[in-house]
Length: 160
Image (tube, rainbow, N blue to C red; front, side):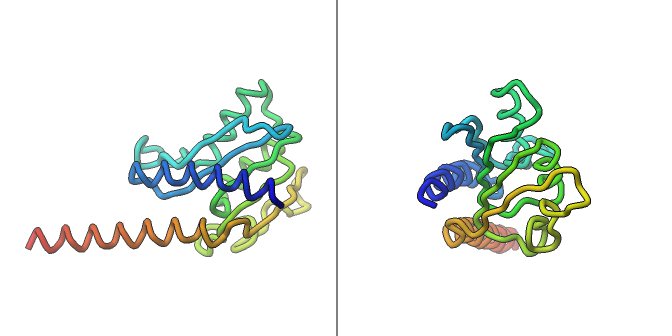
């Protein structure tokens, strides 16, 4: 559990990088043999690309690092419960274990809306550890969207 907190803290650092760029603060880290082989954060706004989620970017880096599309024996840490697209990529890349922070009631497909990673109709399932540093991860998102609403409110006032 202590290692999970350490690696989730690294994912939180990535999420903070996203927030500094005006991106939704989600960060991901992939670990192989107790070594971080990939780190990423959301870049959808920066790239104007819907698929540049933290998890997908980290998966791409890890595949390059291991020179293999199969990410067996790795562990993915992500600050927010993965969406359906990212859950699918996790299954396709054969990541055996993910650890996430906060649940996502609107798009989470690991526990909240669906349980894609543990559906035995797929040829691969994934061990899941949830709620690791969930308060910190959730607070990042809450504060980000609070600040965004405040900026929009101020912008409307200055336009009047």
